Length: 162
Image (cartoon, rainbow, N blue to C red; front, side):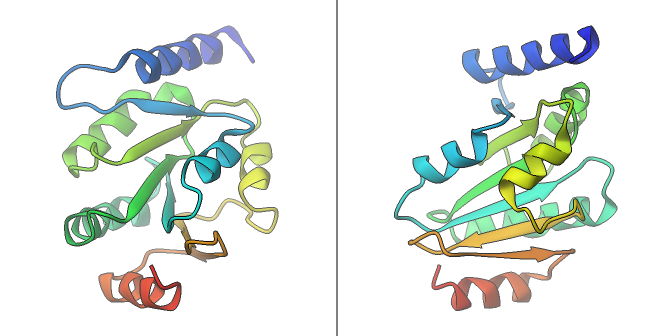
């Protein structure tokens, strides 16, 4: 990891460990092992993992729908994962705040090897975004690539009994 990425990752970890200023959420560093940590912390409950990037126009369109889902289903655990590197943290935070998603659990990649992190999540996933994973209470999952409508999300929730 070069010095610039190391400093950015350190800033991300400090923000995640100490909290951040008002109207901002702590963004946790997503590194090897984080995926299993998320699953373990949410054992025996349905979960939706929304993977996105600041450079993905379709991801940004999904943000409004994700906000509506969160308002409609506040008990549903939604985890947001930005695939951008730690240098994009200010933009990630701005997008989360502007779409009123700071109440969700938010993570961001902090690795020089994003391919390894993607593989840890899903060996069959090659990085297309947005990518959404739906986990039922037993953590059987289904992944969907591409932007989805509210109706498509609801159909998936019904299918996964979420």
